[in-house]
Length: 232
Ligand SMILES: N[C@@H](CCC(=O)N[C@@H](CS)C(=O)NCC(=O)O)C(=O)O
Image (cartoon, rainbow, N blue to C red; front, side):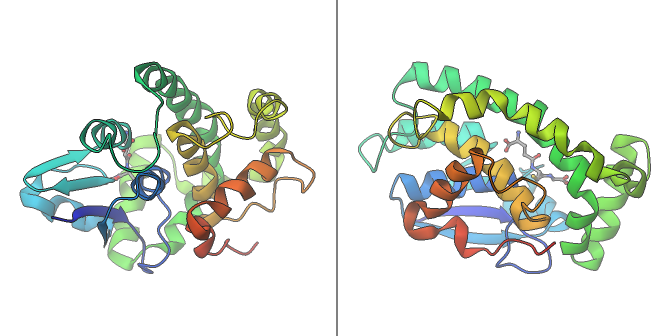
C-alpha cells in the first residue's frame, strides 16, 4: 500500500511551503518510497483521519499514522531500513539530528517567522487567512504587521546565525558529510520555507550557505527547485 503524505499548502496546492513538510517530502524521496502527496489547508487538518492530527506533516502507512517530522523520519528509518539511502547513519545520527532540529527551530525558524508572516498570510485561502491571523496573533500577542515591521534591519542577525553552518561547509558539502542526511533536510526545510514564501533575495549572493541551498535544490531531480522562488 502506498504511503499517504499530508502536505500543508495555501490556496495553490502546487506551492507547499511548510518547513516541516519539506523535511518529510525530501526524506520520502531520499528513501525511494512510493507515496501519494495530499495537499491540505490549515483548516482542513482537524478533519483528517478522524481528527488524529493537530499539525502537519503527517503520514499514513497501512493502518499506522505518524505525525511530527522527526518522528516520521525515525519511522521511515526503522520501517524501511532496506530502501534507498540512509537518513541518519545509525542511532548516533538520530541523536545529533535532534540538536540540528533544535538549532534550526530556535535560530532560523524564529527569524524566518518574523520575516515571512505576512507573505505566508497572502499565500493562504480566505478561510485559512482568518484562522492564521487569529491563531498567530493570539500566540505572539501582537498584530502580524507589528511583528514584521522593520524586517530589513534584521538581516545581519540572520547572517550571524548562519556562522556555525558556514564554518561546517568549509570542510564538507553536507551536514551528512559527502552525502545529504536528514539533518540537511531539517535545515533545508527552513530555507525552502523562506524561499517559497518570501524569496531569498535578502541573503547576499556571495553567502556560501547559498551554494549548499543550491545543492539541496538540485537533489532528487530538482524536487524542491520545482516550486519556484517567491519574487521580491
Ligand atoms: N514539531 C512538528 C511541528 C509541525 C508544525 O508546527 N506544523 C505546522 C505547519 S509548519 C502546522 O501544521 N500547524 C497547524 C496549525 O497551526 O493549525 C514537526 O516537526 O512536524
